[in-house]
Length: 157
Image 1: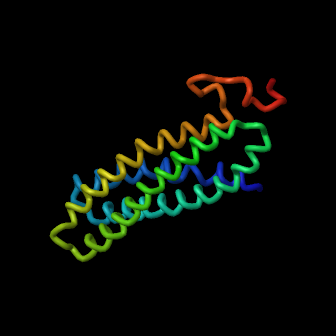
Image 2: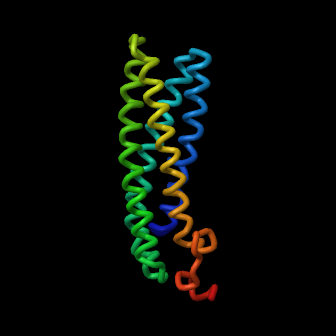
């Protein structure tokens, strides 16, 4: 397994996990179930960690993809979006750690943290769609707004 393959394996966790985390957190708030809320926080923390792994492996995968003749601009755009996405993921992970602590202590601000985490998670979901799409466009030229033949692997030309 090379770095590009590893990147493709791990990069889906932070994106898909956000959807599960938001659903579980909303359900936990509605049901007033601290266990579900804590579960969502743990999912968000895991998403942050996997996002960092994805960012790390993406940096290494970049060199492999460049050798395939993929435009540097397409790769750079994806890397920039991923870097911005990770800033939000760090905020989400940190807020989830605090939320987990506040929730386990049954602090009066526990519900406030839950809503803060939901807001950050929704921002992360919006950003994740852009990151995921730009990553897909690296090898799937057909999903680009302006598909080009110049980035297609030679075996597909």
